Amino acid sequence: MEVIMKTRKLFIFLSLITFAILQFFFISCDKVDEIINPETGGAGDTIWVHHIPQGENASISEGHLARGIDGTIYYAGIGNSNPVQIYAVNKSDGSLKWRSAGLQTWYVNSNIVVADDGSIYVASYTKLYSINPNDGSFNWVWEVPETLPLNGNNAYSYGELGAIALAGNGNIIIKTTGGGSYYRALYGISSSGAMEWFRFIGSESTPITIGYDGTIYDFEHNESGGVFTATSPDNGDLIWSMPAYASSSYNNITIAGNGDIIAFIYTDTLIRISPSNHQAIWKRNAATSQDNILFDSEGNLYLYDQWAGTSVYNISDGSQKSTGVGLPHNPVIDTKTQFYGVLSDNNPVMSITDNEGNVNWETKTGVYGHSALLSDDENVVYCVVSGGKEIYALKTDASLPHTGWPRYTHDNRNTFNVNKW
Image (cartoon, rainbow, N blue to C red; front, side, top):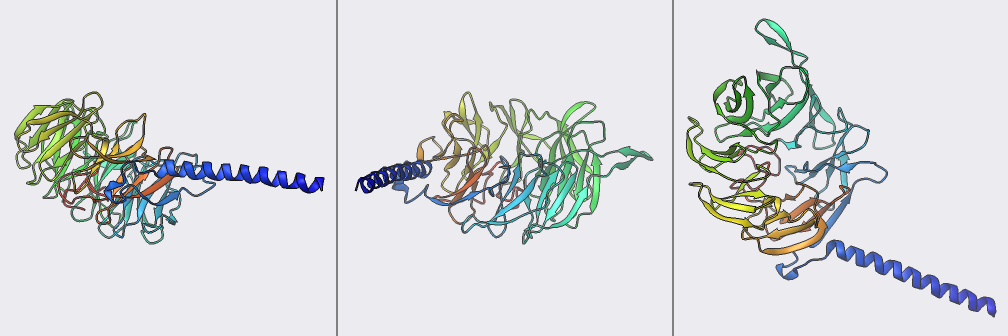
């Protein structure tokens, strides 16, 4: 009898412990997925969670999410001594679709870019990869030439790749930007992996942007200093250049609705330029800690500054509309002019605000760096959780607009091309 009583007590004790563990687990899950303001009809609900495969000592790379033609989510798995791999995630349930073979090094040098036919482009050190979206196999691999012809001689040109943009005809525009003693160049690579042209440049580690007529815009430097350049996509010839200085590697060049260029040409100088003759339409002093330009379809331009908050400008004349607005930094703008991102690095929750800084809703799922990705048509936002081991798909009440410049890379395919969505 005594044995039975002891057994019952042990069973009750273990049951209580199990119940406490389960309560803790479910409470913890609620904290992850809790909706701060549920009145938006489910916005913030978790649709699925993708975990980087167990046993792999890697993290999801900050800022390298991309969305394929069919909605597949792509990311780079980095952070260990093994070569980086590209992962594909099914949009329906977050399951792993495939992962590629290892790239050249343990890191990537560019955004993941999705072509019009769904092919995936990414650079790792000196190699550009074209990846098949169906199974993750390599379509082809292009490597930076060891030498290029220069004034009748062979100039050493083998160096590290940087930014990628997708040209109007499907070619890849890419440049070498790394350290070391070699000649940097801007390259036009065909969709079959052939080098069609190159131009020697004094390279900057800034993004490349493609304008409405296909012109390539970039920051470079020459013997006179920094320059802002326009390059022909057909043969790589320089069309024009003007004095400028890219103050950071995040200095994105954006294109207005009529094709005008809006960019920071110096640390505190924001300018709107005519693409035909690089004449200034307006120029003004503006403060930003990121040189990251976004604008919505209503003609409002947003610049984030870690000290002063976000300032809002009129895109037509450069006049300031407001300052100190509490918008998330590194945000994505949706069709309702809501902003998705982190309000504070000390409290990395996904915050969704209107353009006056009012929080519409939040979720306690953390956001990792620049990693919010908003679907084009399904009202879903994807974000890498702080720590870089998971991607959350959350329900929203809007999608990515196909107007303005709503993401740092312009679109979900990271093309930096004003004509691509």
